[in-house]
Length: 173
Image 1 (spheres, helix red, strand yellow):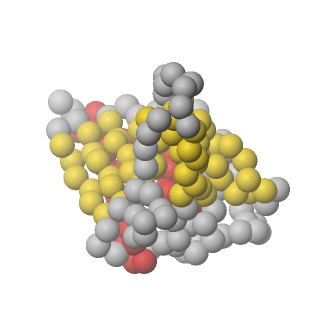
Image 2 (cartoon, one colour):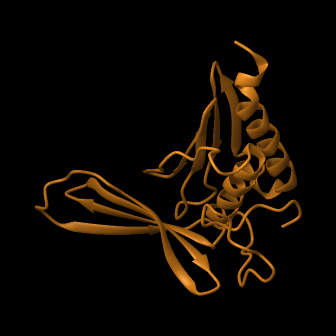
């Protein structure tokens, strides 16, 4: 295996370490580990009303997660690997702050839907929804989770949404 094959993992790991060093508020609640051809990032929630944040970075793409939500893969098709990582860590920045929330819908204690919403200067908007096949019988219960490990960047003055629909992470913000 050539070194170029691991470029995405190397860039992701450097960006993760820089993000985590810059945001010391996250403290010891994170782990970053390479396992063969992928790297796993896990950030544990600091409260019962929050959710864990993470990703699995493969040599070809990134699979984000937030609590019980598993997102569609992010691949560096029209963006550089560095640009994708800046967008992803902007997403993480939002997920660890009051600028994002996770809505879980349960039916008979089975997860039916996981929805990630992001706050923008225009209000809350759907980022991505994951649905599970669950028979529509029984009581429905909705749980809303939100982290508060990092301060909000609202009203996002001077920030522009990336092509991924998130405010990119900027060192110092």
